[in-house]
Length: 131
Image (cartoon, rainbow, N blue to C red; front, side, top):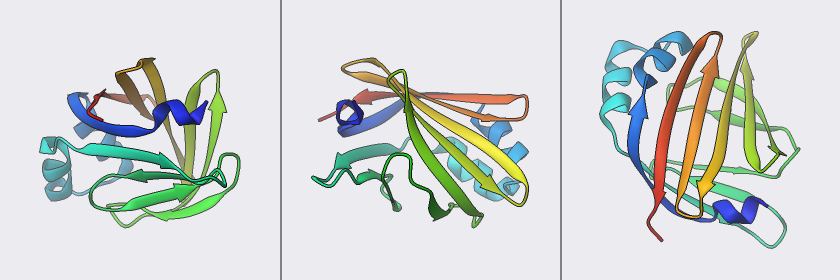
């Protein structure tokens, strides 16, 4: 199922992302840059099941259901697990007693939506397939 996410995706819409980053504790300067960016994400999968999310700035590599460490763009040291749940890739990210979830859901073969949640704050970014 994760192979359906494989491809290059361009962000076309972003809602409430600045509030999400603020809730994470991201500085004003980084929030301004991140909120204005229109990133592309390339998703690939190796024969051994390793999934790579390339955001242009860095790669995130993982296998489903296996914990991995990530240093986020705002320098948080996080522990992560990505699972598949009803066709959605759900990433649970924890650090310093806090938690956020990042859910990637295919809406169609050409569109996926990423929903970011921390506490009561929810942000949504929509991506269209480029290749």
